[in-house]
Image (cartoon, rainbow, N blue to C red; front, side):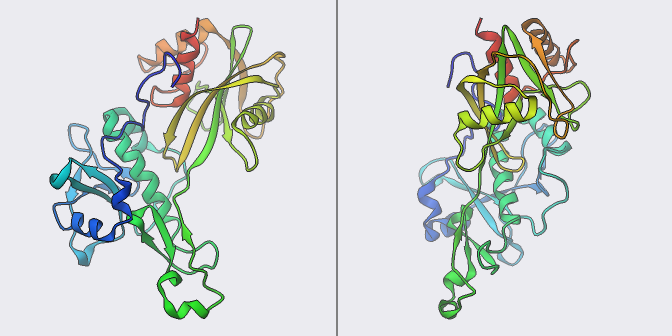
Amino acid sequence: MSECLPAPIAFAGSPIDRADHVRADPAAIAALLGRKAKVLCLDGLDPVLSDDGALVWRDLPTEASRGELVFLGLEGEGEHARGCFAEVPLNLPPGGPHAGPGGWNAMAVLDVGELAIYGAARALVSWHARHRFCAQCGAATVIAKGGWQRDCVSRTEASAQDDPNHCGASHFPRVDPVTIMTVEHEGCLLLGRQPRFPEGRYSALAGFVEPGETIEEAVARETFEEAGVRVRDVRYVISQPWPFPSSLMIGCHAFADDPAIVMDETEMEDVRWFTREEVAEALEARTRGENGRAFGAPPHTAVAHALLAWWLSRK
């Protein structure tokens, strides 16, 4: 991690042991399910919170009422370790991939560890709910490896061995890499806003890494596509898991020699340069829950906020 960065960042720092050695051991999973396992309470994909703003857990349901369970990890150590699980919703709740009111509320009230637990659980159960059928042959899939894999049902069906329409493939939870970057020119920072942003909000430019592309190339391409600005000297700064639905935000910084902007109006509502003083005032205003005079800074839970704070700390 680079200098002067917050640690841990939102959705990082889970206190649960991911226990990969347990995932591949059906007997170990069964043993955990048989001794006081607990299940994270979710309302669709949103967390259920207690009156004091903490995650709510429930006892493991009976076998008859149990849906697909994802093994999140172990709480505690040794023979007293307790299995933590999340249940896959039968139907994917409506709504787009972006964080809704429930997600933003969770980010505002949950402590660092619990927010990380929820983020991992949300990304996993959302993926399972969207991948009930094999992408290769269309057959149904079943949960495997404690929820960190789905197998085409034909993998375990002897009769399917001679069926060319069934492939027996395994599928794994996806993580989508996204570059998010601050771009600097002569002491100013390039920020933009999309139409879906709250009023006055500006943030770092961002975009998905495409196949056959390095992080540096993605930063350069996305900055040019969205703002018409060519960049150089791309450097990595910080990353953040972002479970809406399952991204890894790769925070970078770059420099521009020419400040001229040619904005992509299909994606952006506005792109402009902000001075160091304007960025500092916007971040200070955000601590009060307000927009700055020049723009509204991203919330402290967003990696863009960390990038802006890092940039200010460098001089």
